[in-house]
Length: 597
Ligand code: GCB
Image 1 (cartoon, helix red, strand yellow):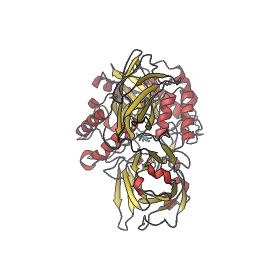
Image 2 (tube, rainbow, N blue to C red):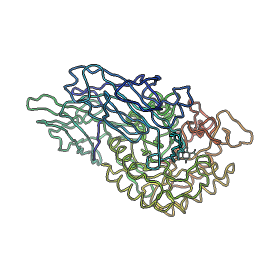
Image 3 (spheres, helix red, strand yellow):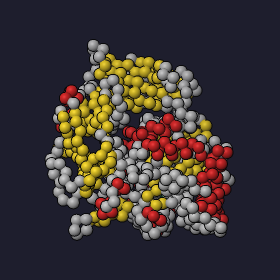
Image 4 (cartoon, rainbow, N blue to C red):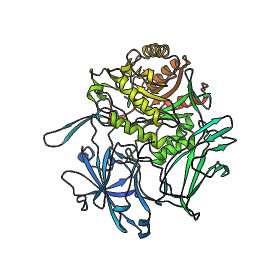
């Protein structure tokens, strides 16, 4: 794998981890800031979190441009003998990092981790850390937005996606130490057949060591395989497979020693063993057909915004299991590492999506997610290739060992019907296939305007993933018409690609919790139930439909807009504070009794 590889920071016998989360100082940049001196006129901001909902100042909340965060932390003298690395889980959307006034790194892209060796910038005692964050996006970034600079230097930004452009230090900031000799990167690659699994890990080390040992430990803490080199393979003779909703995780334990048998580094990487295959229009996990039941979701919660909120992630996972859901898509960006690790443990099946949302020049949410957008020329006018590849690379480097991840989604709803789309996605998909050591299936989520007659990229994909709003953005309040048009399009997809599974990654109707209607008018809880029943009636007729992920698990924050009541997208089956809408009971009953696998 390429540059920037990194392990999740773990405290081990050779490594320490300090979490720098807490209350930091914060301000919007309204004039030049000198990173050498302490920030002035600041307010307190909790990290990790978006800054936007922690303030009552509307101007600050909606400010476009740059922001500064500052904290101080203390380093014990002895710690300076070690290699010290500063690591950010994610900062949205891009940033510059300063330690004691010196710029130590920059990063573009709001949803993947980055780190930098800061040993030579640190002092014993107090140290200053500043982060200059930007929420600007443009025609080259992932996600994309239309950015204009006004004469007075201020910005105007029209995002091409349907969620609020939250900004801030969204995931944890950690300072960790290793010895000079340390493990840099691990890939737990394996072949498995029947009960036997041969693990052939790729382990990269920086620095010198004399000898090493590697072992595999099972869930009963028993060593099931052992080796004495970093390059050999290890065999598990009685494999417990990782299965959907029945997780089983092994640990790969790596130790490096010097000539005197002193431990130089030790690190433990969790992994699961399962196979994935797309065959005869079915999606197979461990050789068995898997039907996706679940949701598109968002990282979005009260006060945290897009910031880490693990109690809520845990609650959502428990709710999903209770409902009989077995899967979700990380719409529309990679979720936190902590959420992914927990998905591994719970046995959720995850479609991991890179933040390539809005590669569609004329996308305009006020016209509705599937309205008739004006004609555009996306593939000539937008220039996302470099950042798109970077986002894919960082996502796959971070997530390749998660057993929960069964498929990569390289984009959500790009203009895949406009001239140039095939060439663009050929390059993106070839690139993605090379990056993934497990060679998982690859998809791209299709928008309704690029329907079966117009789409230019379906031939490149392993699974056809559709976002469809028959009965909402089209056939509004006409569910019989919706059923007819949905079935017609689905049958055509199957005729075009008979060997590919087709699944739904979005379908839904905005629903105001508590709004009831005798005549089941749109926006009422009754209409949401009718809408889903109509869609399910068609899915259940067609065997090649291999999954249903509803849009959305919960209502979520958007920009304010005529069709976004209270600046929320209300297609959740739960409200933003997890109150169930009428559909929830019906859905639970369906999923707990559905026999499609
Ligand atoms: C879509 C988008 C999603 C929107 C949804 C909607 O197709 O992928 O981000 O939130 O439609 O509700 O309009």
